Image (cartoon, rainbow, N blue to C red):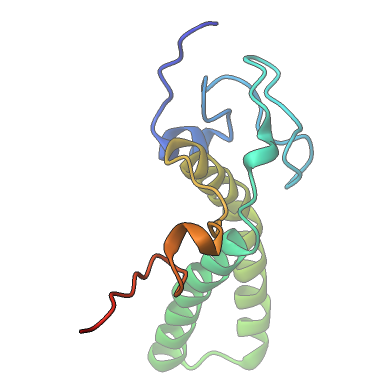
Length: 139
């Protein structure tokens, strides 16, 4: 089996490439993660960033655009139609333009840090209390 030197998650994320080899495409559509890497064969079934990328992108882009909107309003007092023509396109373009690289970065981070869903061990393995708690008998 070949050895891979995976690129940093931010590098493969910004390039929207495979987190293991850095060459294969990560997406088969705009935001649909492919089943596997077309270069190294990495199975992407581990990749589940859920709503994280959308939340981070909407928050960051919204803060920047609204800050600029507020500054323009206070400094120049433009008519309302100027805000409609500038703010909505800025929000849409900013979110759509950054959503794909952010999702790719989160998938690459999951691979790099070997992230997976939390699992509970059986109750018997951790004593009566479960969740890793052990109770000691008091005298």
